Length: 122
Image (cartoon, rainbow, N blue to C red; front, side, top):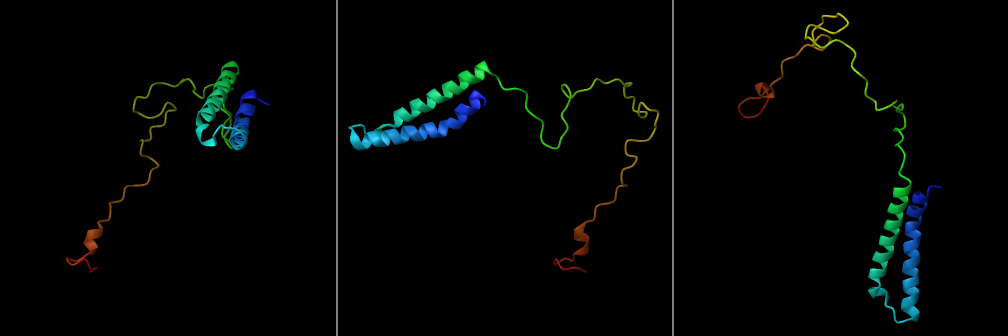
């Protein structure tokens, strides 16, 4: 298992162990449970330092693609090999307009036309 993941998974149990030890010390010694908050911050900080040291030694690999999507080869960018766009059509010789194939525009319906002066329908 990855050392970083192991330490991250052990963070919670380690903190519970520290809480338990301070509770026991509160019962049987003069160390009070309510005044042990600096210990919790120190333990938390030491664990974060250890996690960052492990990450510095073993940087994470590339992220996996989302499930259901094919993995992209390289950066995902392809070089443009066609002719520059002139506005006269596509590089394949087709001269269709950019709006060809789209639905014709229909006028918007104004809902105020159906209402009378008092808000009732005609």
